[in-house]
Length: 344
Figure 1 (spheres, helix red, strand yellow):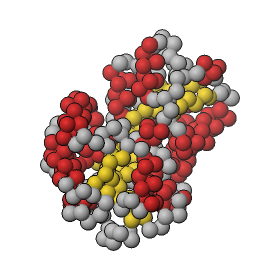
Figure 2: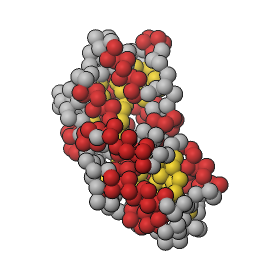
Figure 3: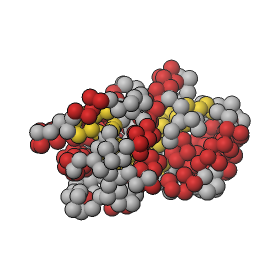
Figure 4: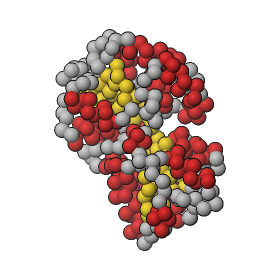
């Protein structure tokens, strides 16, 4: 999403800073992710907004969980107007009644968006961008393309190559990793045990490692310590293209890459100026610009992409999207089971 900058991976890089009083001096305060994600947001959304409206925007970096706590502590005068958050926190915003309703009147560009990505928002926000978790691998060590998840899992089980997957401590591990392994091993959102059993089976080969820091993966690939990794599309392409690592390939194995979705939400009781920001953020021009810089998919169906980047953007139909609501119901139970059975 990243993802680069994944949508989900970026969470591991957030600083966790408190919203500063300086942010209160701006006309609009926006909570966002860091790195290339933030740089792209500034270039594609913030600058056009400021130019068109003459208003100022303060982009604050931090933890979505922290933002929610701060908003809930002062809902009448929230310290932030717009937030970009992953699905888990977006639903928390909805459940705590901290988000404003998105309608065709408040968000003019709504009809131009992918209806599925609008539907996820339950009327209180929409998906701004998405990333997919696929596999990045060294083609010098793994000559046959990893076309399916089953091929990847069996390869690790047989000890054919050294691989790494997200640890449970990684923010998107349940929805982007364990759910995917479970789904492709006979389980689902309500039954993660097949996934846990599959992870244990892969561990038996001695060729499976776990990552919680996205940079850890890239360092391992570059040094030759690992041959393949479950990893985000945008970050993978940045490593391959910008890092000049032509021996590495990225694939979205069938039946699909588990998605990390980043939503945009307007905080309840925040300034109405936020609606203009939302329209620019979700407009075709802003979305096309953002996707071209980050290599992540976006919601606007009319967005145009840099021709060189477009083949790297995972198509919506190639995503595998879990029921985040269902995953949240069993989150604590599954994390406990992972800690007891996997321990890493």
